[in-house]
Image (cartoon, rainbow, N blue to C red; front, side, top):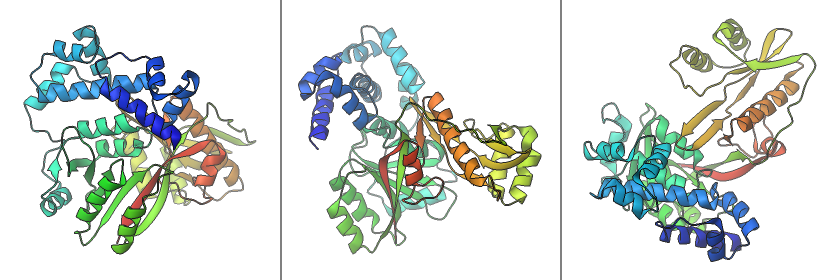
Length: 400
C-alpha cells in the first residue's frame, strides 16, 4: 500500500506539471523513491515508465485543449512543453494517428459520437432507459484507460474499439472521470461494462443499473482491491458474480519445447481442407472455421494468425491468436487452443501454448488470457502462472 501511495503521489506531481519536461530524477525525488527502484515500481503499477506516462498525459490533455478551446496549435504545443509545433505534431500523430489540426477538424465538424445510430437497437433501448447518462466518445474513454493503467484496461481498450459502442457517464463528459461503455453484439440486451478507479464511483453506476430487470454488467478491478460496500450492495440486489482474471506476460523469454513427431507453423488458405477435417473430427466449431475462412479471404481481423500443430501430416491442434493494436497498445488475445483426441494431445497443448507466448514476446505485445478462471484447464490461471503470466486485473461479471 505504501508503494501505491507513493506512485499516486508521483502521478499527481506529473499531472500538476503538464508544461514541464519532467525527468525521471525529478519525479522520483518528489515521490520519495530511490531512482533505480522507482522506475520498476512505477512501470509495475501503470504499465509505463514515469517519463512515458508524463508524455502521454501531456498528449491527452493537449487533445482536450484542441477540442475545447480556440488556442492555436503553437500555443498548445508551448503550453505542454514542446519546443515547436512540428515536434508536438509528430508526437501527437504518433499517438492519435492523425495530426492536431485534423483532430480539431474532426470534432468541430461532426458530433462527438463514434458510430451512426442506425442498427444499434440494444444501445438505443439502453439509452432510453437511462436518460440521465451523458454521452461522451471513444477517444476520451481511451484517454482514461491509457492514463490510468493500459495493462489493467487492455481488454476494455480493445472492446470499445471493435464493436458498435457508446460511451456514457454520470459525471463530466470531458475529461472522463469514470464511465460505462455499452456495446451492441446483435442481441436484445447490450454488453455493459463499468470503467472507474474507485468504489464510490462504481456504486453510483451499480445503483443506476439496478433499475434494469435484466441487470448484466462487468467491471475490472485491481487484483488486490476489495470493495466491501460494493459487494454488500451486490448481495442486496441478488446478483451473482463470475470472477475471472486478465493476464499479461511479465518475463523476458519462454522456453519452447520440442516434441518428437510434432511440427508447428502458421496456417494458410492452402491448409483449409485439413482445417475442415480437423473440425469434422471434433476439434473446433463451425464458427471457428468461418472466422478462419474470412481471415484468409482478406476481410477478417488482420491481426489474426491461425497456427497449427501437425503429427504425421495430420492437423491435431489449432489456435487462433489475434494481435490487436490501439494507439501504443499491442495486445495478443491468445484465445482457445483446440485439439482432437490423440496420444500427443498433452504435448501438443504445451507446445502450442508456449509457442504462441514466445511469438507474442517477439512482437513486444502484452498477452491476454481474458477471463482465465481459477482452474487447471489448458488456459486456466494455474497453467498461465506456470509459464510466467501474472494477473493484472480481476474481471467481475455480475448478473441476476
